[in-house]
Image 1 (tube, rainbow, N blue to C red):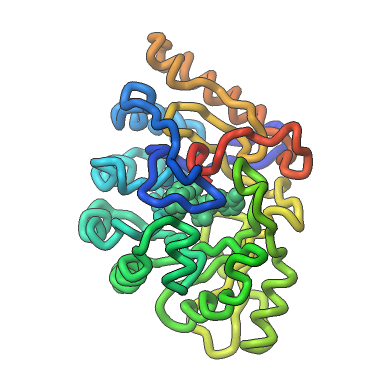
Image 2: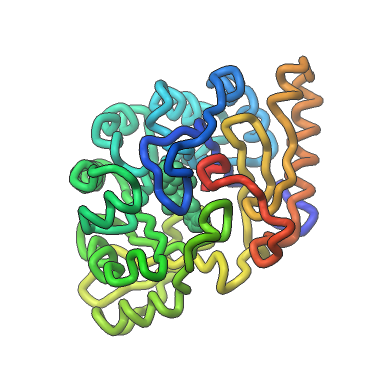
Length: 321
Ligand code: SAM
Ligand code: SF4
């Protein structure tokens, strides 16, 4: 649907859980989150109900996210159901990769259109330090297995003093295995404010120094604001998401539904519509549709990342990235 800024909103990031099997230092507290109880999160039936309505409003593409989507039992089955909904053209998943290999056959059978794997380092010790788990090899095995079955993109968040020496190695994954390696500027959400982001220009300069000049390419590889480039000798692409250094809100096409049923029109603003409350309060389909429509129409003109007071006060695992 078209929002009040005349943007075509057709992409939904659907968080199915706030729980995670990792503790990425910029995303999750080291001792985990105060977990929402099962009663607090939307059931798959509730999600399906809202998704049918969102599809009526023009949502065509869904990214299943979290927390870690594969820690919630039944996520592959949810993907299968989403894929069957009238109007939904594409369902993809964002995962840390730990459980991806175990669920790969199921999500391929369910009709998943692709997977994004988040990986910020290829150094085992650094991975353990950053995530709290000694599971780098499992993730790499998942990436290899998934790349043989589905389009795979790697998401990397470059951070000063954390992984800045490793970006060339991560980019090299796009030489053959994965369709794209995307560098996402760290957004100051929750505990990420303790880390310093590395801007796209610095990352690009480091990659060009190592691999040669980048050529912009027009390929539409995803749903979002990533700009893609080709590096000499690479079969995959390098993508950049300038979440901080350029405001991309003008072209934003997305809204979010959190695990506890909040429709959030913007990652960088605290405003939401409590869809769970309405659903469980017995709202009719028509009333739910009207609430979704209002929530989307009111999407703010721009995020509040540069405006501390207006930023969403939640950590990223609760919102879904
Ligand atoms: N657990 C899954 C994963 O890691 O892919 C899905 C949820 S995670 C919140 C989604 C994405 O958000 C990951 O790629 C993660 O690196 C990214 N992310 C988390 N906090 C971020 C921040 N402050 N700024 C930019 N990206 C962030
Ligand atoms: Fe978990 Fe993903 Fe957040 Fe890491 S980035 S703690 S894997 S939700």
